[in-house]
Image (cartoon, rainbow, N blue to C red; front, side):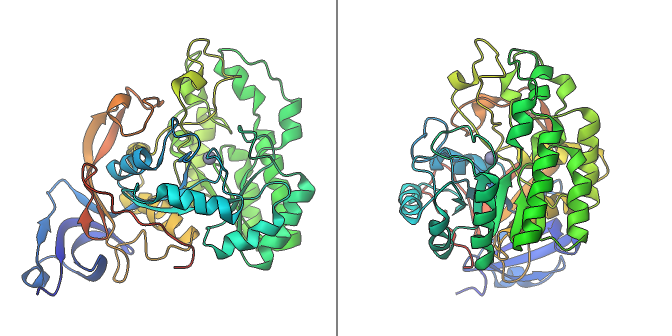
Length: 447
Ligand code: ZN
């Protein structure tokens, strides 16, 4: 019997205190030793893997914003295709959103349906968010106790009728209940009245669509949520921040002691409204991709820590719902498909702006792990799960949507050249083989 199951020798590894060479020893799926290169740990390991000179060992990406849509809308995605795509993209943990699946995850019975559905179909680890909808305040605590990581709500139509929005009074009631057990409310923050009053022309011009989802709708919603969090003491997380105008609000709230965190997504950091062609509804998401100057300010929000994490908001649909025949942004499904591409997309932009892989890991591995309480994920440290992405940061790839594991070959990244490729992904010390049997586990908050 060897002392270790595996030793990974990495000339470059992103560790909690920065990037350096490391020998990482694994036993029973956990990291049990991290030493400087040239250690004798390998003599005591059953297997030794040596990274190439162009490769960096990263902790597996934790993507806490994924719409798997299973059960109920499996033609959009599903646990098998989603988790294979995740694995191919260096993602070792996903947390599934409560909506677009049928039933939505708004009570314990629905959570059980989702868990049964996912069982035996996941190539990476999967956790679940619950949902806060009108009339389910009494379901929130039981869901919390059943292990969901928090509760998502909308302030306006979610896109699917079975997951209705909360009114301001209902948000406050949900916050009071969630604060009582120190849970977390995660919010799609766009104000319904602002959207109702905005121009809403529809049609093929992206500028018209952008005008229909103004920054002010996000700013105002976030402002209200901050006030409600102040009153109730509820922890809140702002999903997919797109309006850079909202960053000073979030920064000030944090300074005031409001328990608030924020995320943005690879597409807001990559694309600009100026470049989106007419009718190109693969770029449609809500809140929308905004101007180039806005994108620069989101990067500044990451630099100064106002935005804590970067997660995909992978929200695919079938091609017919994207209405490519008419190219009408008004009627097309709002959601961007990118689960497999998040790491490369963010790295492509980040490196040009002077960021390091240590920054990317903070935003995409450790940050989301900490945010969901999965402190045994997202870091290369003794005691953590041996979840790794072997990343070649200088290698380039041209994205071909049909070669991705996503169920529907639709993504605005198609045809783009991204820098950085994932060479292999490891879950609890074993290389993930998407052609082999699934080894993903279901994760429960607090375990
Ligand atoms: Zn989403």
